[in-house]
Amino acid sequence: MRVQVLTAAGALAVAGTVLVAAAAQERPRREGRPDRAAIQAELGLSADQAAQLKKLRIEGRKQAIRQHADLAIARLELAELMDAPTVDEKAVAAKVKAISDLQAAALKARTDERLAMRRLLSPEQQEKMKQLMQRNRRERGPRPGPAWRHRQPATGEAPPPPGPGGPWSDGDDGPPLPEPER
Image (tube, rainbow, N blue to C red; front, side, top):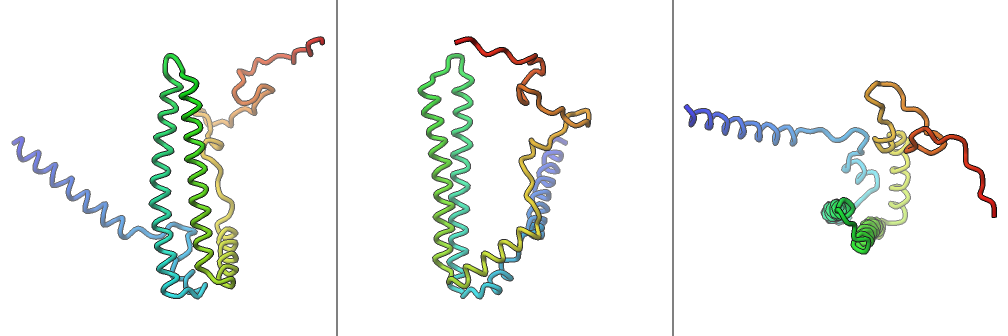
């Protein structure tokens, strides 16, 4: 009986994996994202340009994934340092510097990738690309801000506006203290 249950569970797991893979292949493009083939045609890209741009995008994405993972790990390590019973301020400062360096490297990599893409395009293609990007931004509308800004309390009512002490104030700031005499 136990073998039959395990066999059935294994079969369901394999079937689920196959269904997920099939669904992923049939997944439509994200809404608001332009079709690459249409962009290539509109820009008049040669086959060589299209291949080089694709290679740049793939390499850039790989690098971004690695950098994102490294940054997430560094932030976890910083949290560990900050949660320690005794905080080593030099180690915290070093970790903050490392995080800052990772963020700067990510920005530099994105900028370098964009510059490399620009070098592949003629000035006319660059201008067309700029117009396409502006048009797509207008069609998509404004980007939403961070989710935490729009979060509502569990009661469903709007959060109270921040008081004089800011959003982290306990609300009992009282009147401002007088300036000390000099």
